[in-house]
Length: 476
Image 1: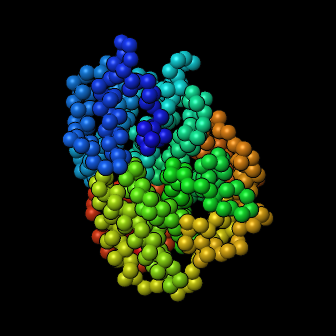
Image 2: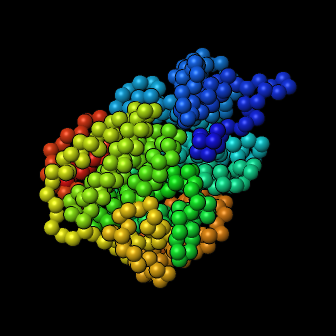
Image 3: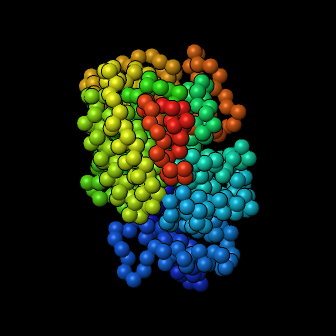
């Protein structure tokens, strides 16, 4: 419950306790045991995750459980199994169980706003858990999403959906918000529509999301000093999603090299966080989508190979990502494909000539995405930002109005999730309306130029879709 429940707050502890004439659902118990076993510190005696999975799968297919909500909750928990890589087609992967869970949710009407009642908050949490998982699978694999939110009218998750409003509920609200942003960015990248107004809107959405984080989820203390906050494992997992979103947004092939520093800085933060995870032995507690998040950071770091000032640092940080993927592959097979892709690309990139121009510096506009962060955890900071770039007086940019609108973030108590389609629009910014009220996007990894023959496999291993448009565009 410690490592799974914060990201899927859909199981009530009372459901697992036998009392009076109530007995817990066998299907739910086996599903909970499965999820817990996937993040257990060590091997369980006389039983394995596969045993729990096979029991839960058999109970589901034989129709043992009659409670429809318990069935859907159990399907969500089966996502923790995912024994095969995404290039394989077994009926056991998390995207398979997601599709079944979504269809069950449609059947019982979870995509419609529940009327006020005893289980309305639970139903919303279940629905948004499915949405968040759908967005992450889409971003990880470069596949269309299963859920179209245009057909849904469920209100966003909020603190009111929890009986106890505290750090866990605030974490969940922020997590669903960043997953939606990642899913929409992936969708736009895949459709090659990540430019113009959509790009500006995503910039605003990410800026507002990070500004609206409550204090306990911030990586650094708010204030001019920006000292590193006390270690919070869940908060650091959450912030990795933010940094990868920056890489996905600014690493598109249409950006050429102008956003190289943004992607390198974001990925350097990710490497620093993973280095802490490795030192603390916490990679075993991460979810399957961290294979994709690791690969996205590693691919972005490859740009550093082309600059003499960054070469040795890039090699070190890619080694951190490789080691992280190697450890993740013990439980998640998709990490094996991601690791192979990164090793192959790194080997090819290491043979490319270096660029003659000096190392890029972070622009004043891009600096706004990092103004609440400091140099700790980011070894590239001194090279890409400098020691005195962040001051209390930042330049006015197209994000200025957004910043002014979120100056209250230190005291923020989110009542609803961040809606990335509602932007605080500066006067100079064009209309940012979307055709779809919940779209987010596709396009490449920043700054990899030169001609390299394609070497990655034809299947879509976790994160390798990021390479596709690079190859098609002839960038490298």
